[in-house]
Length: 423
Ligand SMILES: Nc1ncnc2c1ncn2[C@@H]1O[C@H](COP(=O)(O)OP(=O)(O)OP(=O)(O)O)[C@@H](O)[C@H]1O
Image (tube, rainbow, N blue to C red):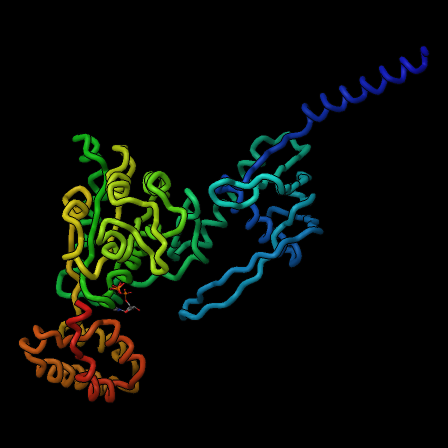
């Protein structure tokens, strides 16, 4: 009996001792996939896996990951083409690494029974454990992971879409499009750009007057005139992201919409395209007849939002401004409304020069081509244009991609078609 008692006492003592030792000696960090740092950390691990294999990692000298998961991404190259990339990330299980001389255990766990209600993805956690007493180790590691994530987005445009009540990146960050590659009517682009810049400079002015710090823009005009392209290029030029909101998305309801608009990531434009299709009868119906549960008044409420000091910039586009409810376009919801029209002869000429100007083989032709293009376009009378004989910038772009300079000029008149039904 005495022996048994002593053995139990010893066991309990050992357990308590071990727990105390673990508490004193081990430092643990838990990350879950609700946090942005979670993705950054996994990407950092994947990168270290690659670097350690080629002995070029500066901070990690040793890494063993036997369980890997595959992540497939599409990357856009600078010439516009894209390629599929495979990335091996640390899968669920235990991994070991040596970071700045300290051994660490990394454990990735996936909760299989419970899901995140709004997004339908399983809960995941990563637990990092180390014996090192250096308290700065984890912050340093996370900062490295964050910097790596930021570097991979530098010079790129991140487009996010709503995923439940969260904004998640849609595909890989895209190459930014230069603002000057969008050729708009005289002063049109500058007007929008200056307005946005003036708004961004006046945060304090809004705060002093207690006005909600938000601004709404409506770009209207025929299809293919560059509305969406301009907004994306402007976001890129100002190093903003785009949050693309589709109001006819299944499962989107007033409360979720309100949450999404109130919790958009900082430095992002919220872009709502074809707003006329969404609410022209104050009911939201998608192509297959599905009626979204977003109501018109719910949408207006979400646009107005809670009066917080958070910056919010909303861009809406439409082909049919006349179909919009006046309640939607009143100041406060739409502060600047701009017409982005079909190609004027001047725009067509600028686009022509952009296409063929840098091409050595046709440089001689370019000036002459622009002249001739001007003549051809000039021969389309104002009356004809008013009758609807117009060409969209998208059509001109397609034409210039298809033909050489000479042929493009010779055949461009046929681009000017009757677009009255598009207007
Ligand atoms: N003003 C422009 N300058 C240069 N390219 C243009 C311009 N307008 C359109 N394009 C080209 O045409 C294509 C379609 O443009 P975009 O989607 O921006 O038009 P949109 O006005 O938003 O059309 P929609 O109203 O149908 O959404 C893009 O590839 C873009 O490069």
